[in-house]
Length: 494
Image (tube, rainbow, N blue to C red; front, side, top):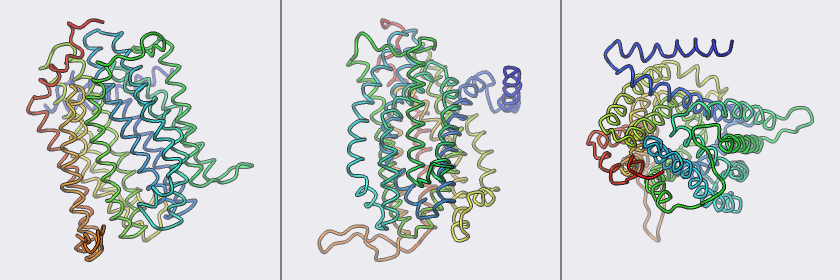
């Protein structure tokens, strides 16, 4: 019965790429392949974002805007190791997909082990450092004692699960690189509802369990991250899936580690530059008021939920481009990249319309106060205007990642964040407000433009990154990068 329901749902969903093909907007076969790979990632990412939205909703209802601001500041620091994990797992999906395309299955499995060792080398020191310095880290972003206290509490606890989060992401990307995006979805269908339930119980308190507030949100997520890691470990040790983790035997291969790092390092720079760029941006928002920070935090969570298809299509593009490269068919890889972009953009533009039209009822659903509500509506609509650009940026980056060409997304991020977004955002500050001082000299770039500058900064950054990634894929230089890496060539030994 369940299989019949699933098949009916699948037939309904696949009417979408079929309709695009009938309109002449899409190659049906390639579009459906991309859609099939993307749907489980969309579901997984959507549920993960729903978790974040639920966290902010529950904390907002239980504790108000101050706690939401603390949660936002703490979560931004969590993006540092999360960004490193995304970069590392981008190297994993790139290498695994190319090895799989070349039928080098044992080397694909070894790449997973290599990624795990690299993850532990990164995650353990980060956990220790954050536990010691959580409070001063939050204090860098705000001087409000209550916000600092709540943000530091959340940060210390959530960082205890960083190693487990790293491993879950490695396993999910390795499976995706082999063409299996459904298994990670099934794991998340179990662990993410568990996460939401735990957070609700621990934030509000139920029966003998006392309310833990922000700490409850952190502990619920940390426990769920650990559970997901255990399930992924059991799955990849079982040998029942398209890739597996082999704990015995050889533990290190410098050539594979180098390729994982080569692909992942620019993406680490991409992610970290965006993460660190967010801190001065949050400083600007904080200077405009705690309500602005809370509205931005809620609006951004809504935006991330709407942008989940872009994550799915990005993963699909990486898998399809990488496997085609591994099989030695560069033209097929090129076609998959562009066809995936077409279906991605069609999907995201439909969601953009929904965001813009339904911004107010969406914002009202968070139970925000009257003064924060109107700001939240504005942020949701601004993010809605950028959804299409985000989709293009992510999908093109996924294709480049599949080929192992990851430097240009870094260039786009640096240009968008540091040469455009931050300079424009600083114009929002009141005139004369110093960003920093050195002796008798101070840097005070503000012109009192307020939220107009903030909105322009957000949108311009998205469109710049989309333009850079699209241009790079259009040049075809990623084909040369893939050939020179010599990973996944059918001539290699398994």
